Structures are given as C-alpha cells and as structure tokens.
Image (cartoon, rainbow, N blue to C red; front, side, top):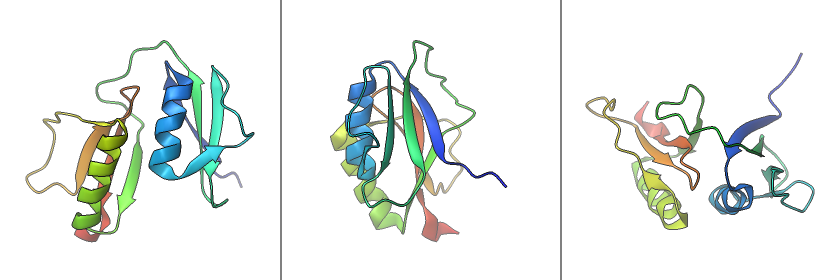
Length: 123
C-alpha cells in the first residue's frame, strides 16, 4: 500500500516560498538547507506530510486543480490564522465561487499558489 509522503508545489523563488511555508506551518528544511531550485520541508515536530517546493516558471493557475487545505478548529482560530498568514505574506484571493455561508477562506502564498483555511467546526 502506498501513502502520500510529500506534496509538491511550484515556486519561482524557492527560498522565499520556503520561508513563508516554514513560518506558516512550523516546518523546517528536511536536509537543513534550502537549495535555489528545490527543498523538502517537514514538520518541526517530526510527524506529518512533507511539502516540497520545486523551481517552476509555469504561471500560477487561477483555479488550481490541486491545492492545500489548512484546518482550523473553529471560526475564531480560522480568523486568527488567516490574519497570521496574511502578516507572513499571504494574500486574500477574490473568489467568486464562495457559497452563501463558506467554511473556507481562499489565500495565495508568496508565489501566488492558492490554498484554503478551513473552519472544521462548520461541519
């Protein structure tokens, strides 16, 4: 049986993206260094899925088929995490596909990669 070990995202500026995701997720470079074109980030606590950043010149997809969902325990934690991530360099994404009462907020990292912060208490 196989399992997901690492999620890979493209980044034009791998070191900048690594700084953002390390701060956002409390991750560290697996080998202790960030290369200009590749890095694998792992949880500082040692448990969880890795996030690899690969140098890419491909334009960011406005509506990506694959993205990260970051879970928050409730609406208050979601709001606090969105504010923290924006302070780290993320941007809110204008999203015309929100449902009437969304449990998620769409953000973009420093490279423009979309991700969501989910209020998991909403059901």
